[in-house]
Amino acid sequence: MTTRMPLISVEDLTVTYGDRIGCNGVSFDLFPGEVLGIVGESGSGKSTLLNAVSGQLEPAVGQIHYRTRLNETADIYRMSEPERRFLMRTDWAFVHQNPRDGLRMGVSAGANIGERLMGVGWRHYGEIRSTALSWLGKVEIFEDRVDDPPTTFSGGMQQRLQIARNLVSGPRLVFMDEPTGGLDVSVQARLLDLLRGLVSDLGLSAIIVTHDLAVARLLSHRLMVMQGGEVVESGLTDQVLDDPQHPYTQLLVSSILQV
Ligand SMILES: Nc1ncnc2c1ncn2[C@@H]1O[C@H](COP(=O)(O)OP(=O)(O)OP(=O)(O)O)[C@@H](O)[C@H]1O
Ligand SMILES: [Mg+2]
Image (cartoon, rainbow, N blue to C red):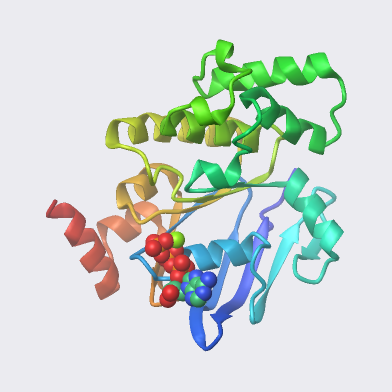
């Protein structure tokens, strides 16, 4: 049905913080069902780019066009604030590195999930409750924790809850900033498996920021490598990692191989 039109199209995006450049002249397309990884060292502009693309940080220059469910093109910084908020609630999801930034820590796990459903118009308590329970199961949290607040969860559980809260409302596009960042390695691996399964089962499009090339390899179809606010290399993930062209990418890849 959908032709190969980009879901989101980013053109010449530049973000500045005063006279410091956050990211500079970035362009890319993301197609439906595609997972794009953004890698690069600390301070290279990954979060800046993600925040700008996800409508949270207005760029100094550039445009972001998004193809809506109605198959219309919307410029996300030209639409009104309520329109953008509606889009963010219905079509987009943002998984933060720190679950505290993406969860409401004081309310129950069930309410954290249910709130998103109410945000897209669900009203029937029983349905909200049963959907919340089924999503807890999907992210491997025991159903008997449904009434507990995230403050009583481990870091890994909080992150899984954040993922459930974000995906339950059926977004088309998911932004993730270091989704496995604060977790230890064994927990990371399990979470990555889970994420990979959900993204492919739900046919989601996603943009994932990570400094971990193994995470990028596992989750993303395409990669963009950033250095000093600019994209220095991009391409299919395997190609970029197996045959890096830019010296900086070569350095990134070889520093991993030496570990
Ligand atoms: N709020 C801010 N105010 C001023 N400068 C900022 C701000 N946020 C980021 N920067 C600058 O923008 C550049 C890119 O930062 P950004 O946070 O996007 O990097 P990053 O690749 O996400 O790094 P990390 O891997 O450490 O999260 C850096 O030079 C940083 O100092
Ligand atoms: Mg960052």
